[in-house]
Length: 134
Image 1 (cartoon, rainbow, N blue to C red):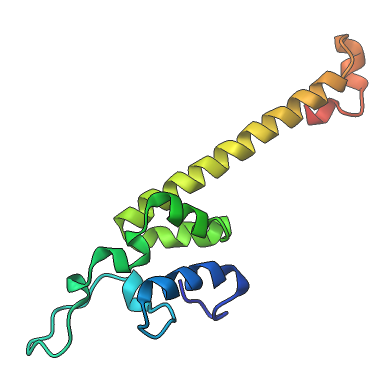
Image 2: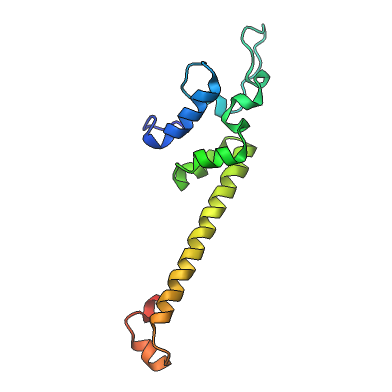
């Protein structure tokens, strides 16, 4: 999630949601929260991440909330988030598929509009300026 750019304006919603959920744990999104939990400490010095309640993480939110937060990201950023965990993979996969289907429907609608502007006769259709686009 953290790239060379730092935290851009697109990540503001993710950071704000994480700040609300962290309940005073520093406010910034910890990269360890989105990666697999580390091995438990041998002496039990610090509590392991797996002992934290699931609702304290971004992944613990309802799918609708995660989708609204991820809606501010680009498709490329969303596809990169699929590597985080299985649940994020499912949520991001669903969002990417919905976006693809939306673009596909829009493309079909545009193609129908172009075809509607073409002449009905095949001979006239071949010579029309829009013939190569439909």
